[in-house]
Length: 368
Image (cartoon, rainbow, N blue to C red; front, side):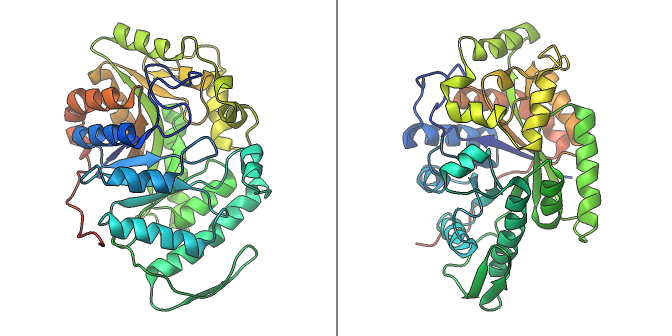
């Protein structure tokens, strides 16, 4: 089964650099710098780029549109929150970017963050209600993507009448849907709608259980062959184990999660089952869960908190173990993102040939 390796655009307020979450970014998230990250990822063999969302980030749609002009083939996994815009408008926005880039769009449906960040946007729904809304949202979007006539939908959260949009999408059958969720509600919606169901990386045994669980749930909708399982983690790769550990620990020296208040909220005031699992794993005593899996990032940053740290051989071996556990998509990152993408492409990607890495194809003709 082909394995997708994707990278990350550091478009948050804290930017990028040799340390995580400093008070002042070492590298600002400008279009020029984010384009440099994207080109480095493209050269390294990554096929997709996660563009994050939240009040602490640049707008993901605008970032992807700007950076796409400075790259050739790599796709953009644009994160957005359903409910902050109508499903019809979201589908039209997605189609426009997909058409203008010749089919280089995938979408990351982020059902929610902390109640605090949701309320900053004026969204007051509770956790499970947000997933209920996501289910309706994706029913509308997918109906529009199927085509065949105007879409009418009446639900608890959306009332859409005779919707038809221009342009159509270039991706076939449609832009792939990446959807995260470790909770019961999140897994249920992911099994029904996701092309790739994402979860934060934790220990291998739990990931294997998660992948098997999502395949079982997808089978209830006749989608067990359609659903891919993915995980999100960081990479610190150096020539020796000792160098890698020093580099990892240097990332968080002198940093503090309070430097970006939104991240402190996301980690410590969360309703996310995935964030809770990451937090719990990081509190077990040692930040080194295994010789390779390190939870230090969780001490200074919310979201993905697990890193694979080691030599190219160690990291390739660990990634292959996750593949054997059922992971078919990896969304990776590392600080600084330009340099770490280059190291991964040179040193690790050649060791992953037997995982059948997905490769970049030539985009379709873009809509002028």
